[in-house]
Amino acid sequence: MRVLIFCLSVNFFGTERHAVELANALAEDHDVAILLRTRPRESDRQAGYDALVGTVSPRVRQFVTGRKVPLLGLLRAMLLFRPQIIHSHLERSVRWAQRLPFGPPVIATNHCGHVPEYDACDGLICLTPAQVAQLPPGRRGAVFQIGNWVLPRPGADRAAARRALGLAPDDFVIGSVGRLDPVKEFPALVEAFMAADLPGTRLVIVGTGVGEAALRAQAQGSGGRVVVAGFRRDVRDLYPAFDLFVLNSSDEPFGLVLLEALDAGVPVIATATDGARAIAEQAPLHLVPIGDRAALVAALRAGRAGKLPAAPQGAEPFRVGAVLPRIVQAYREVIARRRKSVSYASTIPSTTHT
Image (cartoon, rainbow, N blue to C red; front, side):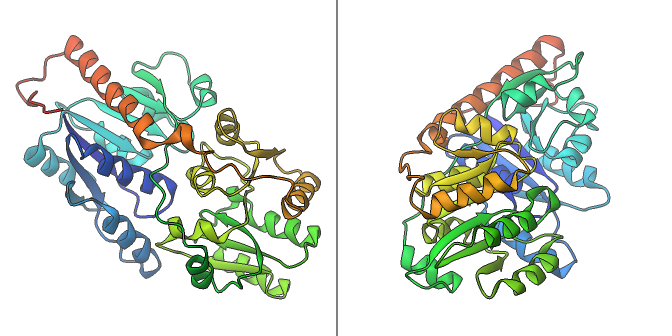
């Protein structure tokens, strides 16, 4: 099967990592290309973009397109690669993929909430049952409920991870990872952490985004107890440094970082977003109500007291080997549906090797 992964974001957050990791995993058995945007001119965005591109496997053919008119780069990828299906990630990629008058079917993944562009796709992957339930009536494409996955964990080195973050060996470390965006509620997490007054404990927040400057200013008043680590390319290597992981989002479609923390054997506290509730059905998460500071403080104290045990196999249901075949099957169903409705064999070759 020939699959084109299409993502116009230049960040290195969960959605973008998911798109690249999907391309890499598919390339083990299929012909795969990825279409990304050209390197941004803004210096503060270049590190994330370079990390994104640097993650792409040599097995994946890379194409790039400009920011203003991505259709030109998309047409070039179509002519040179001739995919049987386009898998688009995020709203803008979906919108441009749908402008191909005689292109292959388009499937999208609902990473950040429903947008009208999804209704015209040939297929839509929803991460949780809640996303499926929220779909408007009358959309024409096939719908699949397939959650995120976690890649095999790199070799755990707790001492190296702590050195990388400037932490002492005997610190009790609460970690959190994500883009520094209002929806992630990191300022509220800092407030709850300080209110919990946990002895010998530090809070480490890994990520970058629009709220970084304000969060760093807030951390300055913590007496060194709150560390804002900023952007890190080696985020998967840092989880072993944590004794407890917390995600305090007000909205979270799924939460790749939750899976990665579980995979590292770290106890996890998460607000009861749609994504966290879906994960908690198959993995041990300690859920707290969204926006409930008292509940979060109590959970942090329980975690510090060792009352939230780790589950080393907590991420087992979310291994890539269990999830990837379902995505491939979704591709096959979408392609088959298109072939039944209109013949495009004259423009898109049907050769495949699976």
